[in-house]
Structures are given as C-alpha cells and as structure tokens.
Length: 389
Image (cartoon, rainbow, N blue to C red; front, side):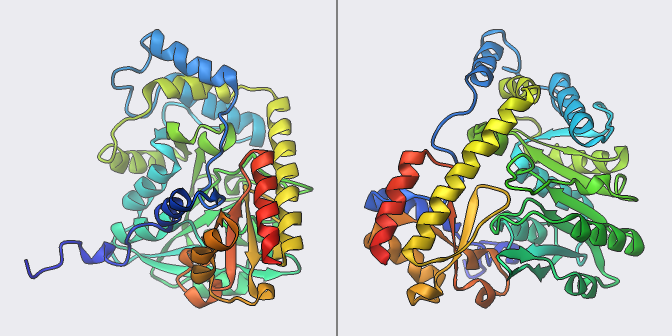
C-alpha cells in the first residue's frame, strides 16, 4: 500500500519510552527506576477482598456499565469525607479501566475537532495521544524550575487561552515534576475557567502521595468549579495494585453522562472482582494513608540524597513517587542519550523528561527516576549511581 497505515492523528506516536526503557532494563539486568509501578503488592486485606469476590462470584461476569454500586458508593463517600465534595453515586460517579481510560473517555466526549486543550508541560504521555484521538489541538503551558520546585506561570496560562480553548487538562500532584499546585495557583486556574467558561479535567491519581507540608486540594472544591470539572482518581497509585486498572471519574450528571457515552465504547466494563476489592480499600483507616506517605517520603529522601551525592541537581518532589533531576552538572545535556547509556554506565534505568514535552528542548537536560520500590532496591540503585561521580 502507498498510503500510511497509521492515521495522521497518531502518526507522531510510536512505541512509548516506557516500553523501550523497560526492555533495556531487562536486557541489561539494570534496576528499573523508569516506569512507575511498585515492586511490592498493596495491603493484604485488599488482595484478599479480591480473592473473596472471585470465589463468591462477584464481578466474574459483566459488571454494571457505570461500575458496581459498592464501589461507586465508596468513591462518593471518599470524596465527601476527604474533601467535602458531595456526589450522587448513581448519577455522578463512573468507574473506568484505570485513569488512562478516564482521560481518554473524557477527552473523546468533551473535545470537538479543532478545539484547543491546554495541558501543563511536561505531561503524562497519554494526554497528547488522547487529545490527538479526539481531534483537538494541544496547547502546552510549561512548568519551570524555580527555587527548588516547578511552578506554573499564571500569565503564560492566561495568554494560552483563546476563543478556541475548550478545556484545561490539569494534573496535581504532578507527574513527572512532583510539584503540588498551591492554593494560589489553583485559585487562579479556577477563576480563569469561570471567566472564560472552560471545562477542566483534573488528573488527581496521586492525591494521597503528598509530602512535607504539601496539601492536595481538588479543583472541584473551588468556587464555580464543581459543575465544570471532571475529577479523575485511581486505585493503582494509592493501593499499589496498578495491574488491576481501576479508575474513576466524579463530575456533574451532565458531564458524567457525556464521559460515559464515550467510555461505553472503549472497554464497556472491566476489572469486575477488583472493583469490589477497591471499594473495601477506599474504606481503609487514616493510619494506612499516613503509613503510605511516611514510607514513600523516606524512600524519596533516600533516592534524592543519593542522586545529589552522585552529582545531579535534584528537584525534591512534594508529591507523586517520581523525582526529576538535572543532568547538566554531570556534563550532559541530552536526556535521551544519557538514559540510553545509563544502564551500561551504572546499571540503572531512568526516563528522559523530554518525552513529556512538546518543546523538547525545554525538557532536554532533565531525567526522571521512580522511588516506588523497596528500600533495598533504592539503596542498591544509589550505590550504583555513585559510580557517575
């Protein structure tokens, strides 16, 4: 055939960097600090809840399209107890095949061809692909390092809005930079959305992974935002069962109906027995979340301190389980070349941040490491990275 097989909307997207670097880790026997998945399972009682659901025949056949009632109720209860947000489990909660499907369904449902979608750059790679599949035009607004953290330039955000802007795609706590948007930053986003009548899709999958004095503030809690925001959550990051692929959206009845219209033609339903287990996970006591944060903060510090000793400039994250570093103090400025050589040089795999940018040059000297691994694995990685110095 003379015509390209891949349609033009997806022509720029090849094999993801995660697949490439994970294959490189396997081939070289390196420690994989690239892809963000834990190397231990989550709470035993949650795993047993999934086993019990399987044995009791719960969810072994198609579950309800919007998700099992037990999980939708647990999600609504979580939003109420944590953030004071009231959602009707039957009309305002939708269960999805992980956050990735939630993002895809929201953008396919809400974006018309030619609409502009603003996303904070660097961004999770599926954002760009989903905007493209919806026929939208992505408009990056770049987060930049300032005084040890990545910050949002509110003037740049405001200047990015045009009459064609339909939606802001927001991620906080933010992957890959680890920044947590402040109340002032979120207030400005909310005021802009209300002023310009914009929808907002917020990816909040790292909501419970915040450190130090950082606080996660859902955008839907800000004035005027409850009925123009689709909030996305996920069980994978909070409970360390990423393979279960259980995510969800909470939004007004109208927005939920729109997202469900797209979602039903993607997976229709998924993760039946796991939905019952996640319903139980969402009811874990505060002590679980406190322990999770303490454990990850200690791992963050272990890896961040080791990276600093190895010669990296480290942007210590206030959220997520990723740490961004600058490789220029090590005499390098090409993150792709650096990451492709790192397994041979130090036996560790990382991800070049440039893959998360439209403006590749802005992300060229930055590299991301994941710290959602066992402490002994991180210590070994730190020891190996010490060879770079």
